[in-house]
Amino acid sequence: MHKLRKPIVAIALALVGSLSAGTIALAESASGSGATFPQNFLASATVAFNAATGHNVSYANPGGGSSKGKADFKAGLTDFGGSDSAVTTAQAASFDWVYVPYVAGALAVAYRLDEIKGTTLSLSPATINGIFGGTITKWNDASIVNDMKTNPAWANSQAKSALKGASSVWSTPSLNTALVTVTLIPSVLKSSKGKTVELYDETKKKSVKTATIGAKGQIAITAGVDIANSYSVKVADKVVGKYSVMAVNLPDKAITVVYRSDGSGTTNNFCNFMQNAANSDWAKNDAFTSCIPGGSAKVASFGSTFQGQSGSANVSNYIADTNGTIGYTEVSFVTDATRAAKGIQSANVKNAAGKFVGPTAAAASAFISGASVDATGFVTFDFKQTSNSAAYPIVAVTYLLGKTEKSAKNAVVSDFASWMLSTYAPANADALGYAPLTGAMQTTGLAQAKKINSK
Image (cartoon, rainbow, N blue to C red; front, side, top):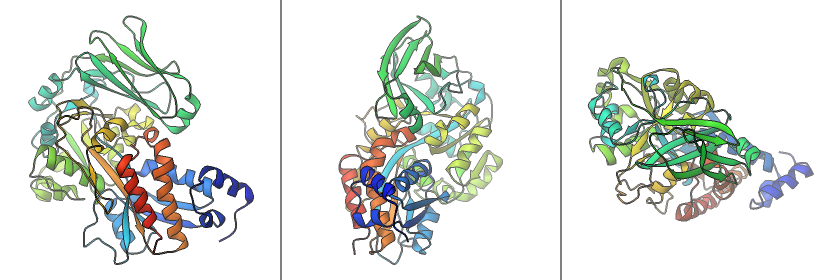
């Protein structure tokens, strides 16, 4: 270890004033592995934390999945673990440790179907159950057709945003109302602050509604629209999406389901949704082949129409590269500019209130607002929120697993977890495609973070 130079100490004091003096004075390293759901968030957060403090916190890329994160942490191979799912008795370490919930996000039902030319799919839990359970095998299945009839079929004809790092999600809370959510990655948010997001009616050649870009990386506009007209979504006069209602002709094409082949908290949370919102025959497990009704034998019977991929990035890449596919992944992997340009999209999912909602940070936060958090920091979702029309119902909260034993490394881990909860996530999570924790959940997370390095 060595003392930091004065300029680095000054930066640390200015940007991370809440951190303990001891960890600012001396540089330490701390490593983690596990869940790939928060990969895009942690890739940014670790860089910012290290720049501010002089420490070297790292997280394996790829993380290996929640099951590996738990195993590495238990074996003492890492200083902290990453998991989106509960640690079972068999997975638990012999030393004293705690959960720290630190950020959340939406799980997208991601697909690529070139034949529908940028149309956003609207899917009910029952239809999602049929697709991922292997009983709906064609894209023109009556269940998908019927879901699409219940919601206006808006299509984005501009696959590649004119402003790299800016993307848009279009959903329809009611027939003649659009909720447009624009996401700006942190660098674009910084360069666009004070500029305008605009919903523009291309048919009538007039602005419908505008919003000024401030500190938040997701900007939502709700406005009345005419399904006979075409609209552009602009950021600083650059078009990031072009929307109009399309006549949808779903193709007589086989569906290829893409699932996580590794031990995955993303899988666990997706299966939790399936079990509680669609079909109680699903189990909740880190392994998709243990979740699905019928188990691994059932998946094997589907042959090449079910494809396993390790990690969120590989699932997302497979979907982006392959027409006719559908899978589940954290939404930031879908809005990534390179994948989006290939045609990957996120479906609007029907919630318990009967509304089709897109996977935005605000919609994920709306759903999480109905969740409960226990004294250990673990979160339980409520899938029966029949009056919560704004909620997107497939989400995950991700956890840092930390050691309570006192050590220089654990002090840094504690500070890192606290800083993510109190400083970094509130300012940056939505821009990165995630949802910051607020209220009682944030308070509990901060209390759990303080238990690291406490004994």
